[in-house]
Structures are given as structure tokens and as C-alpha cells.
Length: 266
Image (cartoon, rainbow, N blue to C red; front, side, top):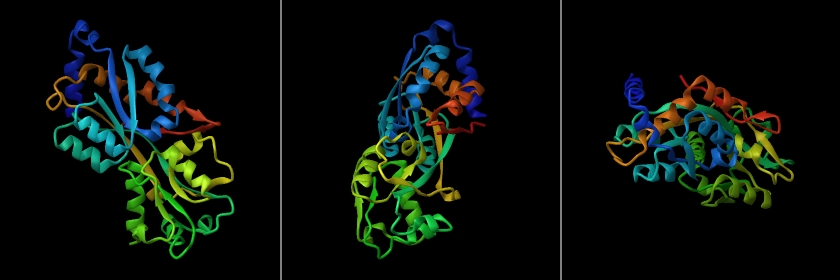
């Protein structure tokens, strides 16, 4: 209801006032950027809303921090706890589900730990205990890294205790490159993996378990916290992305014939 009230207020603004806001900064994740989604969406957004979107692609934690520091007008990330706290503390106006995909476990095609034979992701990760096999983690403040830690916590394992656990401190693309070069494993969002061009002999060795679900949310930055935010333009872009047309265009984005994101706005 709060979101609908905000949107209604801005729909009543004069056309001249709305026309003043033509550019916004979108703080978002490397996963959405690396997948090519924004390069695909931005021309449609500009054509329909008149707003030019500039994307700053970093890990979810950094994106939230940037938005909290008023370096942006709109936020699209994928870690619900951080998103809800961001809105609760008054940094964002509201949060809505935008789209989802899932995480996948990537590894060498010969799969030395046998993760592909696991019944669920818990069993797949347990196989790394006492194994001399490299596991490459992003090790940053991203949504993917936080999701990975949550999966280790489910089975009461501290990944730092694994023999060959390595953190890159980099984005998903760089982390995948290191995992491939070291013949190791890593957890990736599916979209970045599908768009990644240096797979060599690596493949998805485990997928499809409910704990691997990966939800993205969208949040306009609050003008109460950031008075200079381009709010009317940010709301136009938000509502376009949440609209039937925007959701259909998100669904139409494919790489190698595969859909990367699944829209689920309410």
C-alpha cells in the first residue's frame, strides 16, 4: 500500500517536473551486469520512460553501502536481509521482488569430490570436508558470498577449515576465472555462469535444490535520507521494471538460448 501511495503522488506531478529528471544511477550487482541483462534492458527503459540509466556494478554489500551514502538513485541487489534493513532504516522508500534465478555449484567435468552424485546441496558441500580439492569463494560482501556462507552454516561447517578454501575478494567473473584456472569449484549465480566465456572443462556439477534460490529486489532511494536523489525518474524506472511489459522483457533475455532471469513482481 505504501508503495502505491508513493507512486500515485508522483503520477500526479506535472509533466514539466518529471521531465527534469532524465538520468539516474543504478547501484546493482556484478551478477546482473556480467550477465548482460542491463545492456539489454537499458535501451528499452530509455525508450519508454525517457530515463537514461547508468549502472554501477559491485557486490551487493558495496551496492547497499553506496546507496546508503547517497551515491545512487535506485538499488537492485539480491540479499533480502540487507534489503529489508536498508528500507527499515529509512534509506529506501520500499522494496519489491523483481526477478529470480538460482545458484549453481561449478566444478571440473571429472568432478573429483562427486558433488554431482549428491541428493541435495548439503550433501554436495559435505563432500569437500577432508578433501584436498580447491574451493574458490568470492570472499567479498556480495549477495553470492553471503549465500555461500549461509549454505556452509546449514551444515555447521566453517569453510576456512577446509584444506584448499581460497577467497578472491573479487566479482563473480574473476572468481570463475580463478576457479577454472586452478581446476577448482565455486558457487556462482546461474546467469553469470551462462554468460561466462571461458568455461574450458568446467560445468555445473550440482543445481536445482531449493536453498539455491536467488531472489533480486528493487528499491528506490529515499529522498528523506538523500535529498538530491532523482526520485521521480527512479520511480518511473522502478514501475516500468515491475510492469507487465518490463517483466516480459526481463523474461525475454537469453544467452545461448537459455533464459537467465525469471520475473516475479507482485
